[in-house]
Image (cartoon, rainbow, N blue to C red):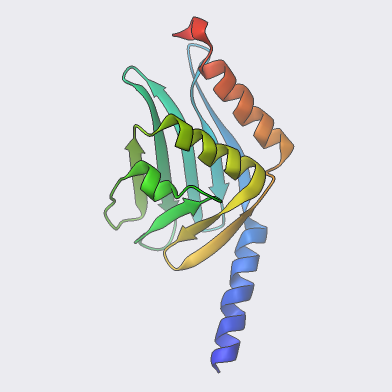
Length: 156
């Protein structure tokens, strides 16, 4: 019986990974990018991780919305960066988790670089979803173009 339970969980994780849709996020303010990131969508979950430029500097935003279950935990872990540790934020159990924090620029850059090229593991409650890298070239290019434009010196 335990063997079949293990197979079910294993196949469920693979099915969730195959269902994963990855999209770029580009938010414009007066035709200049103010937020750039990635969206990870399954049938039940929409998870977004973005870099946001505001008057106080640059922050990293992690937002997870569930269509069905209460979210007790959510995280994305690349080869060397744990998003929850990077954000150093706490969240309350609900169907929507939102953490925004000013983060270390080097660690944030490493997180996105590793995510775009090497992929990551996303954990939502007790489910693990593999984000297989490299992420689609169109999505990578849109993200890189967005951040390149966002940080041009003439837009400060």
